[in-house]
Length: 497
Image (cartoon, rainbow, N blue to C red; front, top):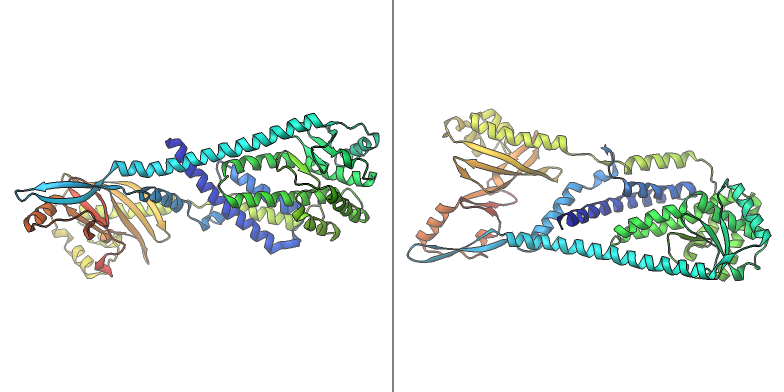
């Protein structure tokens, strides 16, 4: 179950990256508009597929993913896990003859289990969603395949076969492509990943002339030439995993639209400029036979989505459909690749500096080094800090063993460093100290942490005969505790307000 939950969190992070990249692609398209030719506009979506399937990416300071902190996102996910259900329970202590009842929060493994169960539940829901989408897709494919086999027959029309062969030669396609007559589709469609077939509606066979069939076959051959069916299959697998992300679904439909326009562009490059309007007229003529096609990755039809057919017609008659190499297109593709196929710059170097500040702080206490203390501590100009530094050499001796358990970046000016330590034989709970960025660098800031010795606290409460309830103000910001200490943390220390 832990592996499943971890996988789901990884997918959530990847989905967030996809949203950033898709937004970036839409921004580029908006800025360049018609200046970006169809071929290059479509290739931007191929970069998205590459990014979503990359197991690793090189780090870069100019990566678009520096705009979001994936490390902070992981922290938010973990924090939401902890906050999903209370992670404290009530312990009762009976002290002395007066039988004073003291209720305090303490670490609760059941609370942690409840938080983990929250993510287990989401992970299970994610898998169920994958199963349902897979089941729906398989049923649709199987039904289409059964109907296609049952209702299709080989086309033996010599004229159509000759036109098909001419179109194959025009696009340098050498493998066999079957031509089938069928009633399964309403408009000519390409079907099949391994052995592609062109399906032509029986009722349409006698309605189009040779030139119109030439345009249709060129369009379908363009899909084969560009491996669009394989691209659609890969995108379908991505959708299967990211079924919960509507932005990726929007990108998929927009990719299919751009795919059709890019195919039109390739097909138009194989005919004369004067034939462009005839090509557009053929698409319009097919509208008389249009029905909502099956949205299957292994099936592409000549008309595509009718909602976007107007955009295709406009592109065809505007003469802005060049399929040639474009300097602007290549530069755009390279720039987008540099910004999106790279990962966010790692904070390892910065994290090492942050942890070194913590080490310097504890070394200054051990060596009673006032200068090192002031250089590592936050708010070093505050009178109380200076006073402690000046009297550090007179402080008593103590033995401190500490270990940095975890270092997390909260924002660009603050880290949280969780420390486990033992002072004079007393073990402390894990304490999440802050390290903040001041004008002269990173500084250790223990001012937000308050440590209460448990035994002294209980003794004081017992002597005063008071009762502290679990929902009292004192315990609202308790972070952790053990048998020796209670740890509280506030956003700002009153000392420095």
